[in-house]
Length: 444
Ligand code: ADP
Ligand code: MG
Image (cartoon, rainbow, N blue to C red):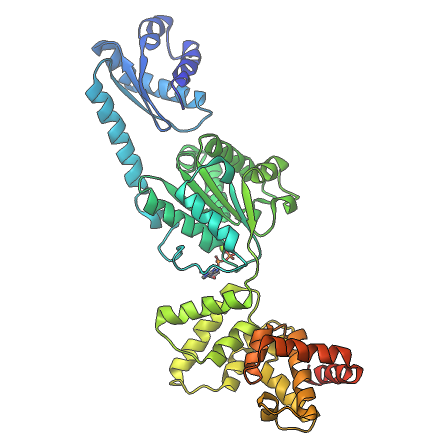
């Protein structure tokens, strides 16, 4: 907002029914701008008499409304002082800013808590770029090239976590900034309340007066035209004032086909990232960080089992951790791998292969070739045992999609090249390959 806003407001005031031409000419048009920034406009009246009038109930209301209209209906705090009274100007500005700040000083009142931060966000290949860019946003909010900041991806992959981490970091880096986190759903509900009460002012003042707006699950706007329009106006007001907007969604903007395309094209104006399902290493790092936070211990076997089987949702991984840790506590640590498998079974996706583990595969392969399972994980290298072991490793690679290193470790600490050669041998050998296919059929 700059001081031309007052000139524009004057044009409106000149023809306002509530103001006669004498008052306009001698009082209003002689009032000047003493201070102006994005939030506060301080007007200076030329003498005590004029000040009394413009500050009075009737005129101050009309003047404020005209200024707001001149500011595209965005809220402005208007103060009046006597021309030349620098102290009064400073005092007005300070008291306004202080009031605005104290209103926003409790982050939890604006949807943020310390639960989600960059410090407890595990970075892996699936989210590396999104994370780096989110950190950059938190260091320099409002920059053109990252505004809006748009995160999309399936549920349970850390979008809300990353978004709230941005909000928390901004509050730490810039305590004076006003940050609001809201779900699209509560934004919608608040808007509906405005419609019912016919009072839009407080709603608009709240959302258009922020420095950073974090709006979660924007797909909720689909099919809601009224709130889409309101959001569009909020969006435009914030972006044009250089305020940061962060958006999450379950899909890319180009796939928000039923949303007003003025909005979808605006979303593509900033920067976007898709958050991918976590790879094994990231899942394990997240799981281990939970253990560490709670000072809790689980065998590597259990940790690997969980992280190998819960593959596409971090929320589920957290759920598995909570369930297992409470069982382990109840059972005083006396839980077998089999118990763990039973506990986790309802959490795994119905895809049968998720129930399989290297152990189950090893047992099935050993049985098929009439060997004992320990032979497969031993150092023994007779043709019979090697072939059986290769079949088991091949199934673990192709069917469980385990990493070569993980497989090698399981089969007696072999290197990933050994596993690779073993698998290639199966691919080249028709008979062994069909054995592998038959074993898979048997176990699924
Ligand atoms: P989304 O919003 O994508 O549905 P959330 O941000 O709500 O997902 O994440 C689900 C859960 O997983 C939360 O408890 C969150 O803290 C956790 N989580 C997600 N990603 C990570 C990560 N990279 N590091 C640590 N925790 C994570
Ligand atoms: Mg979310």
